[in-house]
Each structure stands twice: as structure tokens, then as C-alpha cells.
Length: 454
Image (cartoon, rainbow, N blue to C red; front, side, top):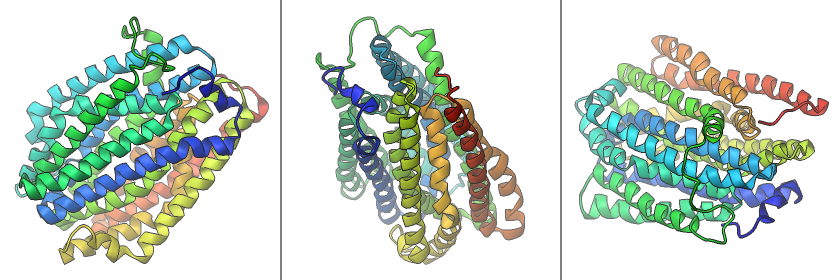
């Protein structure tokens, strides 16, 4: 944790490139580690339980995205608000944000579980579960939902750790979670023969252990923000500002839930259960590079937010340009790896040849536009970082709802499975153009100096 009030001030004085590396590298390492865990998790399930278990796991993606949506509504919004308030040197409000995040995550985490758990079977059927995959999906999600409040608390506090000036500790929290998972997953699946339930238990147990450490970090009396009396009562201004800023990632995750449902149902209709399993593979690989860019965006967020709050717009522009460059570089690497070695990538997850062939087709299409996707992701995160959620929401919703859904509903009727994969690449292409228009419009305001902070 930050030990005094001078550490966050470097966000407004240190060289932007150095700051971006300081904040982004720990976040990138953390996000990469988290994504690699998801990949190894799928590998363990694919080889230790079977190809249909991979399909069952893919069926759970929508409900997990929906749970993540409520977590990001609080965590992303509050962490952005924390950065802006520190830039404005409003340290009292920064402490109250910590207490409000704790209460909001408790309420949302428990509430989501109480609503989803009793209706889990019909929810999974609606998401595309067949008689062959339902049991795998249910076994996994019962455990995940029971630990949902822990997941919300873990991600919420980790976002605040990063924004309060402790990116290294935020990184270590994620890495600890991954390492514990990597030990428990094979033990539970291969050693105890718990099947797909073993993977779910490993996830929740690792988050519980790391959450205890996060709570301890915020208990340090010398920390910049910490647990203390009077910060837990919900304040209307903090709650509304946090939820307003967090609405963009919330809608992105909620829209992702709807998109995955449509994708799964279209894949089942045109290719069967194995096609859904192939999407699970494509999703894991794609998210490896997406998560790296998300880590970069997390490093950008406190720098952009602080300097925007301090009205140092030249520094805001500098971190934006550097973030776009590195995001593009990351996605170009992902494009090259997948397009050159698609069979090798897919074969890591399973020995089922038919599943590998379907996954290869998906990988080639989904990654076709990836060199430009990094720009779109940074643009959306940038609007969140400076407290402009409306534009971030526009980018998220047009890409995943206005663009992707109609294409998904139409194209597979002519191209079958190929139409499902192609829909994602086409919608990404259109969203990149929209991101460029919105960002160019916003940058004109910077030049005119008429920006207004929240």
C-alpha cells in the first residue's frame, strides 16, 4: 500500500512513459497470469474430464460474464473515481470510496447468488446447455455462485489497490490467485477425481485466501487509504458517480452475456455440442491477448484519471498515444501467432481431431481483425478513465449489440458455423471505425481546453 500522500502525486509529475510502464507492467503480468490460468483450467478440464466438459464450461460463460458485469459496475467505476479524486487532492472522499466499495460488493455479490442459484437449470438450458452438457455446467456453476460474493470482493479491492498507488501489490494478488489455482486444479481434478467441480473449488478457494491478504493490506494504519470508522455508510455522490462510470464495463459484460448466448445457440444449431466446445477454446485464446490489453488499460487508467482531474491535458494525451501504440503491438503478435500456428494452438486443449478442426476455423476468423482491435479497446477504456462513461457505453453497445447481434442472427443462415466466426470479425471492423470518430471528436475538446471534470 501507499505509505504517504506524496506517492500518488508522482502521477502528475513523473515522465508519462515511465509511469505507464510502472503501472501497466504489473497489471499486464497480472492479467496475463489470470488469462493463462483460464487457459490451463480449460486444458485440465479438456484432458482430465473430456471434450463435452469443455462444451459445458463454455455454456457457463454468459452467467459468469453477467456476474463479472455487476462486479465491474462497482470495481471499475470506484477505482476510476478514486484516481480522479486523488488528482483533485480530495483524500477524504478517497477513503470513503473504499468503505462504499466494500458494502456495494457485499450487497451485489450476495444478491446475484440468491437470484441466480434457484433458477440455475432453466438458465443453463436457455444459455444452450444440452442433456449431455447440462450436468457439467451445473456442477461448475453451483460452486462458483456460492462463492460469488468472494469474487466480487476480490476484484473490487484489487482495483482499488491499483488505483491507490500499489500496482505491484495488485499484480501480486492476481499472481497469488493464479499460483494457488495451478496447484489446486490438478490436485482436485486428477488427484481427488472431483471432475469439473474440482476446477470450481480451486477458483473459489484461491480467491478466499488472497482476499484475506487484501483485507490485511487495507488494515495498515500507515496506508494511504485504509479501513476506519465512518467510511462504510453509503454516500449518494460516491455511489452514483461510481455506478455511472462503471456502467460502461457493466453494459459491456452484460452485452457479452447476451452475445455468448446467441453464439452458443447458433453453434449448437449449425454444429452441435463440439462447436460450442470449439468456441470455448477460441474464447480462451482470444482473451489471452484481450486481457493483456486490459492490463495495459488498467495501467493507463490511474495516470489518465489523475492528470485529467488535475487538468494536465498534455499528459493525458501522452499516455493515450503510448497506450494505443502498445495495444496495437500486442494484438499484432496475437494475430501472427494464431494465423501461423492455429492447429498447434487448438491442439493444446484437446486430442479430439474434430474439435480441433472446428476451433482452427474459429481462430482464423476471430483473429483476422485483431491488429486493429487494440485501438478500439484503448479508446473505450480512455473514456472510462476520464469520467466520460457515455462514449464508452456507445462504443461497447454498438459493437456488441447494434453491430454484432444482427450479423450473428443473419450470416450463419447462409454460411453456417463460418458465419458465426465471421460475424465477430465484421462487427469488430465497424466498431474500430466508430472508435476513431468518437476519439477524434473528444481530442478536439482537449485542444480547445473546454473539458469539464466530474
